[in-house]
Image 1 (cartoon, rainbow, N blue to C red):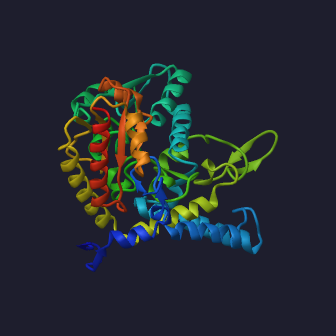
Image 2 (cartoon, rainbow, N blue to C red):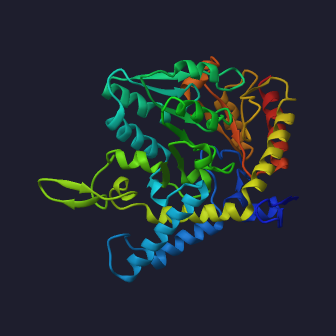
Length: 418
């Protein structure tokens, strides 16, 4: 148990990890007769009971399509859906709630910008800058767009610690650069990139910036106005919310100027066979029936985190990071990837000459859930001349005791392969 002073209110709040774990029903189960140690939070986070119960109640008592009905249930659900949009706006500190576009996830958000921004602004021989540590979802959409527009993709390198080389980034910028798209936090290394500085450098050259916030949104406060990014994308299931819901934040100016990515119902103003005019923001980018229950669930998840306190969460996860780093680095034969000074509680490693799949399989039999492979960042692992790693990604419902269990499990696996 750790006591923190909440900065905003001056009130004292108690961070009780045991109590928090009781909010997540899935954590109380056993796997192969062993207590579940869930260290795959980078892939998806577990859901608190309040999110699960709220969504169940919505399906059983309130379900109705939004924006289209004059009856009670439709009006009720529409109000809750739009309240969820305002919750996201407040969580990100966006200037307007119509700058919040609901999508099905980060991938859809990035594809929206890649297509729509690309159609409006990118021409032959123009350039898009990404980084060497991007998730495939922030590489492939830009490659496809570059192929379509006959443009070029430029790449910011990083050093062996997993830190972007900003001097090299500055060298990439030129008159043909149309957009910079960079991950906020690396899903393979845990590096927290200096996105505010990256954005400022781009803006000095009148270049807009998209930030992939998939691995940052659940770990720290996000202030898009302070960051001054032009776009910010994330997925609900990474922040203790449901799957199938995501967010694209975009500055009003860009969203107004960009053409719609998808078309159909709810994104129109008037349709004739001769011409269609589009709805105002945010609906121009929300074609078809939205995942309204998912959006409301996301809002509830954000309420839950706000209630605990993001500063409290960040402080506790830093404790997990320091403890895990200190203990894992004492294991002979373990190589840790991602040693940046500023990072989240994520450990990518290889154990001796054991294939990561074998390590992950053995850990699973001991009740420890980790991720193995390239984590959808194949170019990143090419930097290290390897095909991937074992990844343990922790959040605020994990414990120091679980880290101890992981270390002991890894020692047992080492002995098996000697």
